[in-house]
Length: 115
Image 1 (cartoon, one colour):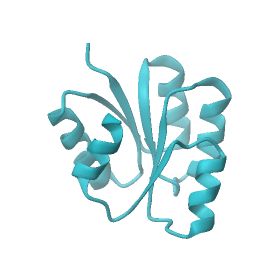
Image 2 (tube, rainbow, N blue to C red):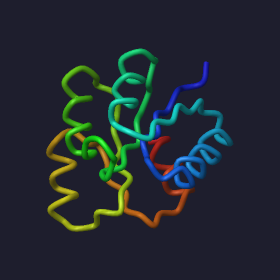
Image 3 (cartoon, rainbow, N blue to C red):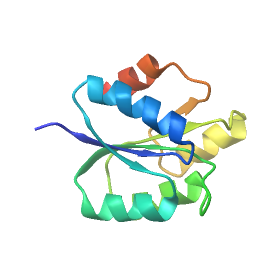
Image 4 (tube, rainbow, N blue to C red):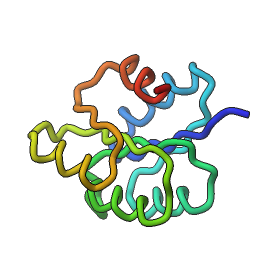
């Protein structure tokens, strides 16, 4: 059975691009454009891994990461335009397993998802 990846990004073009690459590798993809939707999906679907943007319309991705970590152990990868070292350290400290900055190579994202 294919693993389900949760992609959380309010930029539809980015979420769609990531979805295409992940589906080409055989993954199932659920997309959320806000933290509330992402939390609902995480609580109701068998998520294997989540890709989280930091800048979301309702909560920041750091808070979302912390809230997901309160209930779930699946891997979290931050996928964001926030490139400062302090942002990377914050994401990793709050429970993210990896941190990828935008712009990104979709093939690199797939490689990191596979690991």
